[in-house]
Image (cartoon, rainbow, N blue to C red; front, side, top):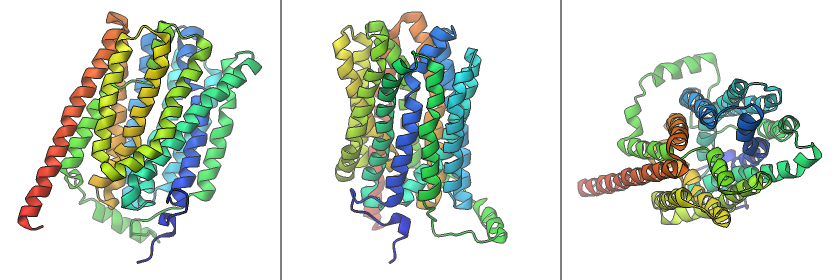
Length: 417
């Protein structure tokens, strides 16, 4: 059996060229995004004069609204069996949106710019994840998604360091920093245009008649085809996301405990660097001990770390807690996408990833708003305890997935299937 070129393995961790290239794309895009992200809440509250709850509104509305597009883009990629055009469009929109922050004179301007940036993310995420899964052999899905998440997060680690070095040269002018953020994202778009190859799931479109035929055939699709196990996992992952909030709140908590403003990018670097260096080993580990087992370990770490954030009073302890959260991300973020590939057939993965990314993204709105309101009303301790509780509830639901999958296999073995 011939293996498609985009799915052939290379000598670098056994990963395909598509996976390696998309890792580079995500690295550059996140350098661009995260050289400005740590300063957006500061820009909103201290430069533009908005209250803390508006930070939650900006991050929540932008992510939740854009998340609707993840279902649409994922479904379209399945219908037309083409992922790359949507991925290129999404990265391009995000690239051209970021420097517009430099023109903001009102908090609502930031909301609009962040919205378009996240629309780009919504357009690209599901098709990109489907393309990654189709460019990888099943036995190393965890490694592939771990590598991609690690490259993505390494960019998120380098970005704040770059900002830390550039800001003094820019006289601490955040608007100039926003403009410079365009450079790395521009090269990310070029990389994906010229070096990422489309992978087809066995059906190629050669003419308009073929497209019409496929659209007609695809109307028979029902979401039930994704399977009960997928929806149980989706429910657990969504509740888990309701307990997690934007890193903006983590940085505000750090500043409240006593971290100086100048060191916030370094603290954010610790989080991202930890996530980056452990993502590929965590993905490889998940291929050995099971994707779901690895994911549950990450959930345990999240619950404990949010509890520690609720009670922290030591500046020094914060550095360790941010590293814990990075380790949690390495065990769950890429591995979660590998679980989707485990549960859903290849031709429906765009739709599945769209639903997965959309539901966990839409959860960002109530998560951020609830977190912000609890913080304003009762303080940060209550808000982090709230997040820890929801993480624990999600873990219980996730265990139900394990039980359901075990019983399903046992029943099929008894029937001789």
